[in-house]
Length: 279
Figure 1 (tube, helix red, strand yellow):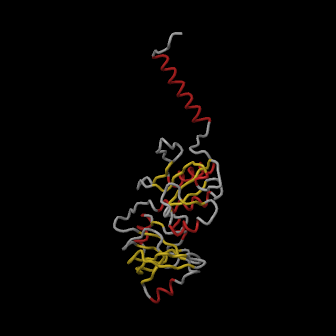
Figure 2 (figure 1 turned 180 degrees about the vertical axis):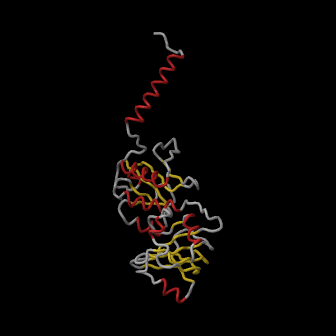
Figure 3 (figure 1 turned 30 degrees about the vertical axis):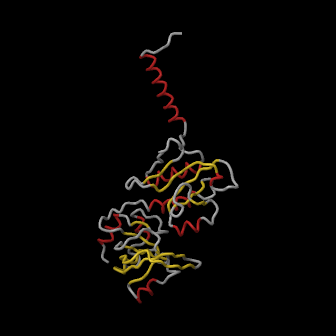
């Protein structure tokens, strides 16, 4: 048979390829990962942060990173592997996600089902979560939010500003401030000297009520009870008190803050708003 090598044949082949691509894109749901929870988490990350998975390793085609667009830093890695690499007694292919968390929180999470020492990452600051529905999507996304916070670029130029939660059920901060305007506070993030801390006091206040400046960091401090565990603290100086309710949780929602469960960067727009109001 005569070999067809002419331009007409090439054109037909190209049109056929385009037709197949069109059928694929319009008639099928394209999934990046093997298992349902992995794809749900990837979709949730895309919706929350606008970041798509990046497949960077030809040798491992299903390994994908999630990278902050601004800082270019990773805050999550989904990988497929044999479960015996996590648990010697188990076998079978699974998918996992590695995220970055506070070392103290990692120690506590490793006591729970579904969490493992970080695979292929620093085990002190990263942790592996198995994506087999052992942990709910909601709880995984809460932890990813913390991991993502480590990658956020400070946009306030002169200083880093943080929102830090406080629970009045466990610590009477007002009583402590009556004794001294300089107090110590648990340090669980990469806070630096001269950073600004906005203390968000939980119910019954549910408001940012205090502004502090960081004077000293990374102070060793061993403490543990049923509600709190600390291994290091920072020393902070009171700058300003805010009227109760003026910076309520409902107001913070206007600036995209939907939860304050751990220290997080202060959004630039909220920082500008606070600095304009009467203190």
